[in-house]
Image (cartoon, rainbow, N blue to C red):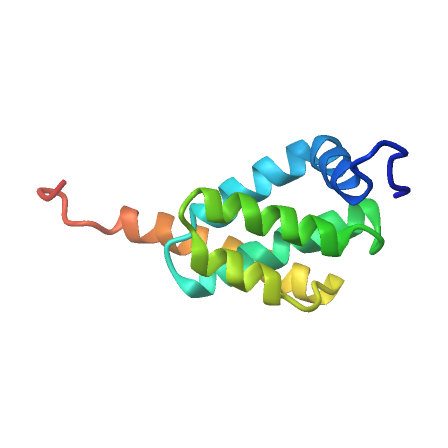
Length: 121
């Protein structure tokens, strides 16, 4: 994405990218923030970055990762922000595996609820 011609240069570019990818950043930050374990957080990060890459290509991934990490820090999720910054590659295979694991986890949670003791909430 070309940088703006105003005085801000790179800052204008970051602001423009944040505005363009507002929905992806909001959804990604919410999704990653809601994960309760490091394993599910890693899968969420893989999904978010992989989906972004699939939609927009590789050109803006580094900037998207930095903006996502900043948003996570604002929410008090420093560990997740570090993991996003360190994230190397969300290949299609990793994204598919993360989605498959997430589906299995969701199914497992539903199955656990079915077999709870009938007199316990």
